[in-house]
Amino acid sequence: MSTKHRVLLIDDEPGVRFGVRDYLESHGFEVDEAQDCRSGQEAFWRNRPDIVVLDYLLPDGDALGLISPLKEADAEVPIIILTAHGSIDLAVRAIKEGADQFLTKPVDLSSLLLVLRREIENRRARQKGLVEQAREARWRAANPFVGGSAAIRALHEEARRVASANSAVMIYGETGSGKGVLARWLHRNSPRAEEPFVDLNCAGLMPELLESELFGHQKGAFTGAVGSKSGLLEMGHRGTVFLDEIGDMDLRVQPKLLTVLEEKRIRRLGDTRGRTVDIRLIAATHRNLADMAREEKFRSDLYYRINTIPLTVPPLRERKEDILVLARELLRGIASDLGRGEVTLAPESAPALERYPWPGNIRELRNVLERAVLLSSRQQLTPSELRFDATAAEPGAGEIPRDGPGVTLQEVERQHIERVLAGAGGRVEEAARRLGVPRSSLYSKLKQYGIAPGLESKP
Image (tube, rainbow, N blue to C red; front, side, top):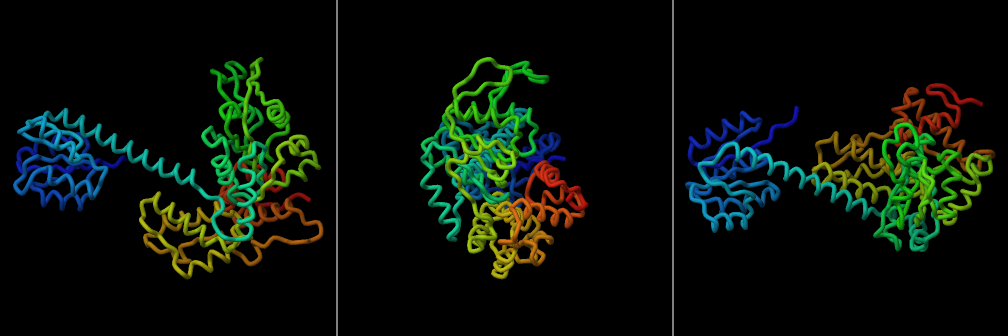
């Protein structure tokens, strides 16, 4: 059931209040009543209404004197003024003071209902817009170089040097380490910053769907193509195209992408004409593309074309001195999004955050903090509220073998997936949540390594 909208009705005439309240309640509103300025302010603070209907003349003041304190308490609350002595000058003064509507008595109840619904919808739209603007602003301003570790400083210096280039950039890094944030930073700091930034995650997409998303299609190109559609490469013209998890791109699609990069032209599925595109490609992967190219699991010509400028985002466990700085910054954004005010970390939480190996990197850190804020009513988070992955928190679970004979990055990844899957009782959905990856990506990994849920991997 949807929550009923709450109206605060401030009027000194009991008959008016009764008639308006009865009508609005019959149309699904909750109505609180007050008879003067003082009781109206008290009811406003107590009940936090969605909208105020306010008589102009009250026993202890008038509407113009009440608008300001109400707007100070909630700047977005719509205020509708009712008066039996309406005039243009009075209406203009009321609007200037912050009123949203000015209606004369006796008010037509159906008109009042229409105004109430419209003003509430306008407020909802404004609030959604403000939230989206705030999120978009944070996303645009997201800094991939938070912290002072040597690893992150080195990455910042490399990224700064190549941001203005037109060459393709290949971003390497573990899942959840911030490759997408770095890609957006490169776009924002490039000559193409005012042009489109389009992105696509290649993991888990069937070849046909991936091809359609990238290149677009003409009407009738295949069953279900009821209209023509521009592809992401076309929409990114003059801007930046970010292909995440490009190592998972199907081999059948790779030569077509290579052609676009070399000839700067695309052809939609089912089309006979080519279209010129000018894009800068930024790609990312957690795989070792060089090994994949040697094993013919990734086209070597495409690898050499997109690997012009390689950047590597360090995993969180290799920049432990940055963890608290990152956690505090993430916590500010999470608390703001959830309307929780200021939420901080208890002093004893710092060692717990730094000890944990963070196999899911920054994405996992954010998930842990968001879960803690949602489930805790306190403004300071203690270690007991930071619920880590029990499997990853086991001694040695987060350690990566070093210099071991024959130990490859893929072997480390396979072993970690097996550990997490075992800790999740073989449940793929739960294991994907703990790893911080989409379920489709985990299924691809299980297939790649021959791992069956709850079973040992094939030799």
